[in-house]
Image (cartoon, rainbow, N blue to C red; front, side, top):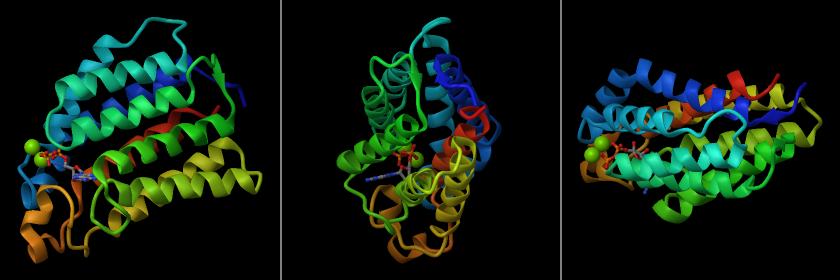
Length: 210
Ligand code: ADP
Ligand code: MG
Ligand code: MG
């Protein structure tokens, strides 16, 4: 498989933005049930702004990821802007200066993104947030690469783990973010951020490996 270069990272960012645009109404409907009905519009606005600001052809992976971070931080308010913004900023820092990424660098990028979200948001697993999709995805990515899977296989497993983690938020009670204001009434609904995080991992699986 060819190396993960800037153009692959650009394709990943585009695919993430496409998926969010396509599922904007679904993301917002989920947030209507347990939040303030803006997760789809928030993420779509931020990612469309990111696409407009991406550096041109030949840009390094870290520069592209950093442009996404800046757009999300400046265009998306609420919880998800700073959280995803921090994730992309940390991801950018994890691969700074590299023109191409090895599978281990891709794993490091997602691990750094998750660490940034957890430092900023203080959510552990089981609190009904995007962490419930991302943490199992990062774990699956690492485990697959450690046993010698290809990057494509490892990312596919990570995306499946994210989806399962998101499904598993449905019966949980939220203890972070706006949904936590509902207490027991947050039970029975999928966490919207866990779906956007799943779309991010699915976008990665579809674009980063050759
Ligand atoms: P807001 O709640 O400010 O309207 P969004 O609706 O865009 O922001 O994003 C809500 C999502 O953010 C939630 O579904 C959840 O996944 C995520 N979230 C909220 N608080 C936290 C946190 N402390 N840590 C991790 N994720 C969080
Ligand atoms: Mg909201
Ligand atoms: Mg809001």
